[in-house]
Amino acid sequence: LEKMTDLVAVWEVALSDGVHKIEFEHGTTSGKRVVYVDGKEEIRREWMFKLVGKETFTVGATKTKAAINIDAVSGFAYEYTLEINGKSLKKYLENRLKTTNTWILNLGGTDYRIVLEKDTMDVWCNGQKMETAGEFVEDGTETHFTVADHSCCIKAVSSGKRKEGIIHTLIVDNREIPEAVE
Image (tube, rainbow, N blue to C red; front, side, top):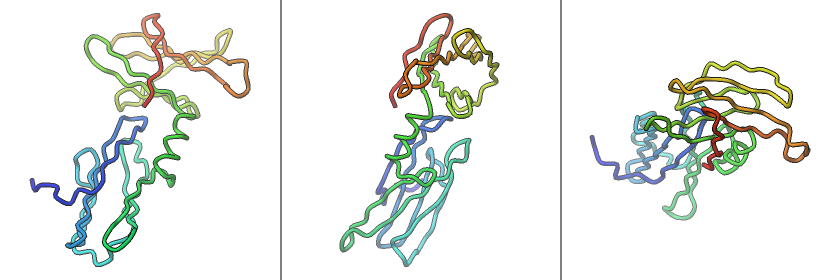
């Protein structure tokens, strides 16, 4: 394995199926471009005469669209920006905070990352989309699933305030789990 001598950018992107590491090599003398996702080479281009441009690829089990933009800043300096689903990483992550809830918990010595996609009510645990059963209850809805023989439930209850909307709470073995900030 050759050393990543031309490594110019590293990003960590939290998606529903996990946190992915994207690394980008740009050889400004050789014209080389290499994109790695979670340590696996996705794109390799040698001898690119045009040093600016865009590399597009997908990330994770959900095949989320990603692109790295290469722009010349001045002289031989370059700027590298990552886009996820056509949005800058910052905008994507801001939007993601509104559309998902994430919880990190430890059960029997194993760490679990549980993500709720609010628009579809899909639940992900450590990269796997979970089988869930939803039911209407007196004050909202409950989405039930199991993680490592532990019964889990995401309760969705109206906050009573329009700005706040619906409050989602994860309960594992009758214990409320605090939401994680990624």
